[in-house]
Length: 179
Image (cartoon, rainbow, N blue to C red):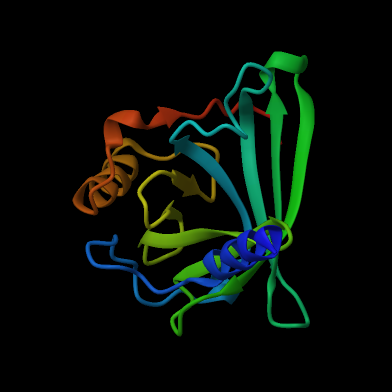
């Protein structure tokens, strides 16, 4: 019985998508057709799945593609600098959690989902700022492996304005010919 209650609590938590008071603001609307394609990670908050004693992700990219069922396929790639540059690939699926598609729920291991909120987006979809409502995850993404200083400054300022501790951001190594 206790196991069933814990499982029910975890599944309920995995379904919660409404922002609470004080949550970061999102961009309002994301055109998923324009958002699809490959993005390069320019900066991130360190995470256990990208930065640990066994993993240091470099040449990080994420590719999004629409699926016939209306969801989005997600393929994350990086090279593990602590393992001779071995490629790491994580495949998942995302679904919209908001009418404007600016809040997604992403799963790499069902039934667990993570929040993927677009809090900043260049009007031409050249770069994006993605975070989580608890402000414990943050990524700055670009259509190219490098961003101009002005674009990066604008992206970081959006994160700062939304209450993220931007001092935690670390630049992502992107080598020519990486992922």
